[in-house]
Amino acid sequence: MTGNSSDHRGEVREFLTSRRARLSPRQAGLAAFGANRRVPGLRREEVAALAGVSVAYYTRLERGNLVGVSESVLNAVAGALRLDDAERDHLFDLARAANLSASARSGASATRARVPAGIQQVLDAITDAPADVRNGRRDILASNRLAYALYSEVHAEPVQPANLARFTFLNPKARDFFVDWPKAAHDIVAGLRIEAGRHPYDKPLSDLVGELSTRSEEFRVRWASHNVRHHTSGTKKLRHPVVGEIELAFQAFALPGDAGLNLFVYTAAPDSPAQEALRFLASWADGQPPAPAGGISSRDGDPAGAPSRAANA
Image (tube, rainbow, N blue to C red):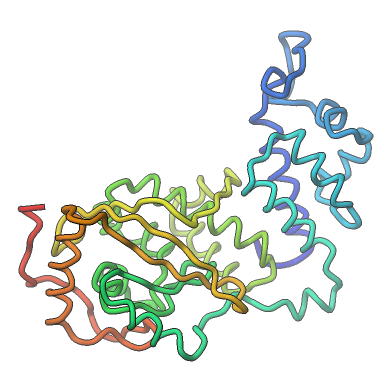
């Protein structure tokens, strides 16, 4: 993605064709006539019939032209392709971007790179759980002390603000830090895909995707799959250099009035090994230099030499 209308049409085309290719006639409730189908998944005419539109009109949509498409048609296409909630939202985001005027495109705001005043105070008031604020590019823009300690490996990156996508695909430490690295990698790319649909003219996002595509085959393959996923709750399994393996539940909260910024809060079950690990992490963090305001770090951040609890985790 480079932020022009031609690239956006390509995004639409590849997303719709990839969703059509994964869906068999049987999955769509259709009889499969003939064993020699020339295309994987459904044919265009089958999707058009399921959506209740002409083949010519669906072909126009799949070629990337979503200008003027109605909400009812988008819903019909989403139903025909059996899109899940994240995929449906992504399709609507792509349509909204396609219908922006030229002036609106040139003035389209990029994802925030800074947090509003006062957010750091809110984070610092959360003392018993890691909490940080991220934008859609996966920049960590602000952290409380515990979150900064939890993600010390990420904050040690030389490029700031710390970026989870860049760390995941370009830093060899990531494969040890994320206990389930393939899942972490999938979630990162699926989230960036959603962000690209919402903000196709965000140049810093385009630059990040270009950098990762150039430097990481793992990223390039996942990006080409066009998978999308909402990443607002779940569990995160990390292998921290000080406290060892730790499994935490997380919840993301959108910051009102600041589109694209989310507050992530991590919690441990009461009386669990994870809660004990967080207490140990807090004790270790108390002996470290203060986390920089706004999450921007100029220090090394390497916890090497810290007392390790990994052997007992």
